[in-house]
Length: 133
Ligand code: CMX
Image (cartoon, rainbow, N blue to C red):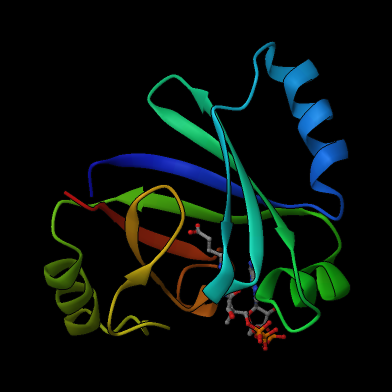
């Protein structure tokens, strides 16, 4: 794994959260993007070599809607950048970790992504992500 690519934060109101994080970070977001398959709208802020990703649900059955219902707003996942997501999935499976996505799927910000089970990583939801070339 190369670096923390981004930290995902579940928010109820993307527009309001954008204003909060613009004020906090002293900069504008560099993009917003809807990920239809995941039922989310996202907003990205650069911070050094990492990013903050704000995630708001677009439907009641979205993982973000469920997460906010259960746990409220707040930190949702940490995403690690990897060079080769397929080989990382294999490496982690061989170590006994449960992958929620055995096949990588298309995520926001031009990435292939896969999530790991939070119970295997001390209660933290981990995302693997590989830049699509
Ligand atoms: N952080 C820590 N623990 C979490 C968690 C989170 N974000 N989400 C769920 N969990 C825990 C739950 O508390 C639960 O624990 P218990 O069994 O002790 O109650 C366990 O994991 C299973 O969770 P669940 O609520 O039964 O399962 P859900 O149906 O809510 O699914 C999850 C949650 C992690 C399995 C998965 O569906 C999910 O959230 N996937 C991420 C999807 C996502 O973020 N998509 C946007 C991607 C955008 C992008 O970056 O490109």
